[in-house]
Length: 270
Image 1 (tube, rainbow, N blue to C red):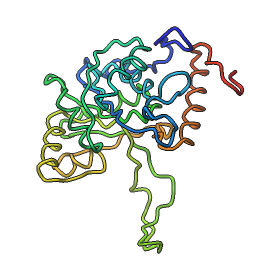
Image 2 (tube, helix red, strand yellow):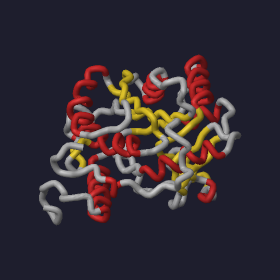
Image 3 (cartoon, rainbow, N blue to C red):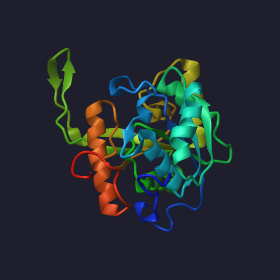
Image 4 (cartoon, rainbow, N blue to C red):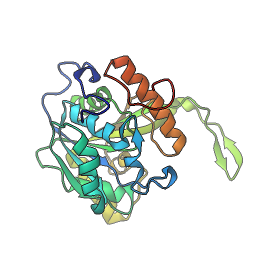
């Protein structure tokens, strides 16, 4: 990280069990092809400021710090590569190598593109949306460890249990109220063994199937996927209101971790 507003000090890393990872065996694909139309930044929301750094920088740092991660692949528009290198990577001090892959017309196309840049010796692949800047190292490690621990698993996804009452609706009419104990809200990262993930993406491509997330493609291809409970703080920044929530949460984390002075801004942290 630059010597500007914050430090990337060791206290920011959660304590991990010594057995969490046998060694770096995971490639992290970070999707950064979004637009910033609702955020007023034509470069894309991944460049919107969040506590003194571009929003996507926080995801990059988390995966760089994760002991399981050997390398990162950033998926973005080809004309944004130089911008990511200068505005994001250039402001961080990273230990892991970073490569680039071109984003596609859809998220699924972008992941498929990123898969082509994964080294063949990587046993696991973690797919993460850069719009989830609050992901923590501990959550990444638990997802990776869960897959490693059970040979029958194709993958494990970060998720949280539904706390809202859910309604099955047709038009506007309520048809049923399902038991919410069966429902989880999926997040990222979603971590998979490399071979079943690549096979699932190839099958979806040839079949013209569009899934809602990476897990849906692996499930469709017969892979067993489990949920790893993750904090609800791991929100996806979709609208400007989400950015305010993310900033408040991140500021509180940084204060509690004692990681230096917050950047000058209006409000209690000025």
